Length: 86
Length: 229
Image (tube, rainbow over all chains, first blue to last red; front, side):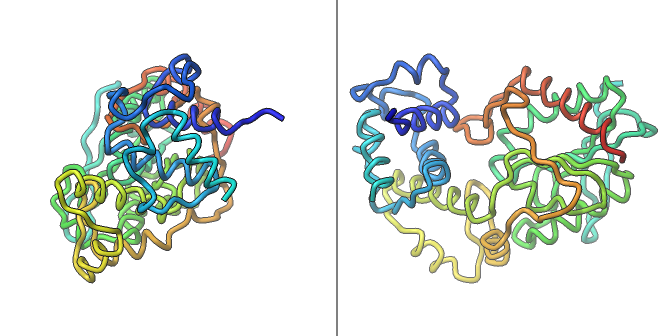
């Protein structure tokens, strides 16, 4: 079974941050996000969280959100997976 | 022919501004109901370019300032979604609107005339409110003020709360919390894929997208031709 979650997260990042398909396709677990992508500022984070809730059908408690969550693509996908499986 | 026309309408004792393109005598007159609040700012340029292109196809388009937004001098803290819907009802009657195009939160206030409606990415009011609250919390945190959504709402109580640069009254917050796009007949939902679009309203910075404006204009021209206005 293919794992579609990383691709869903890629497409959310692309839509919110206006990144190209090539740029998000090249992301792997070690790709740094917060601090490395100028497009990802704190204002974009709010939109990202709401889109993740809508598209992954999860609920995110704002208390769960800290800077580490957006450190790398891998940490963001791991967070999403924990919520989806939760 | 593709120059903007500046028209007005009256609501709540105030004169409000409408940006129009195309001839008054055009047979198709389309009301554009844009996304709400900060999402409106991020999509305005793309929409205005689309309107300009529709004018070259002989279609009139109307983009009205909602009371308390854009050039309006009305008090935004006195507005609710019902006011905005009522304002658009007046615009729709004044301008003889034959078709309606709404985007995102615009779908919460697009039930203003018995004409065909097409919606792009309609959203519930509660989702908009949640994102705006989150944005405010993150900005507060950066400013060294730690708060929670509950704190903010409790502190504002019955007073206005500033979210994404808009001062929203308790009544506006309540109306948003409850609002869902009206189920109407004559509504068609289009997809972003049909116009090769991207969700500009989600972007951290306003951007335009000439290709999306062109594809959107072509879609609206085709759609409005196939449904009788």
